[in-house]
Amino acid sequence: MFLYGLFERNPELGVSLYRDKGDETLGPREALRSLQHALIAINVIEPSATLSYRDQLSRLIRERDSVIHHASKIGREEVENGRNVASRFIGKYGVDLCGIDLLQ
Image (cartoon, rainbow, N blue to C red):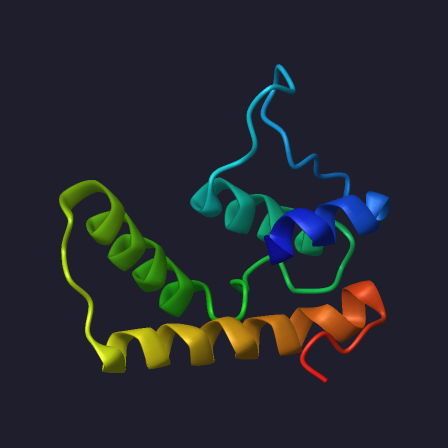
């Protein structure tokens, strides 16, 4: 949800939250990839750099998929780790790109 709001509030990123035909939103992997490309294009991150917390968010997305598609269970520690990573990611990009401290 954070990424969708980020794309909506920041037209300078040049990223639509919808796929080509406009009837389906980007998935989380595609949204992260699009944000990384957009931040490189506007010189927020270096072309050789990756999005902060990308690896941790990718792991969180895999765990989410496992829960949703395979009815896997997730423990308290994994939930807490995922929440912390999401909070750090939002803290890193929220103020700079939205002008709002979303975690305040």
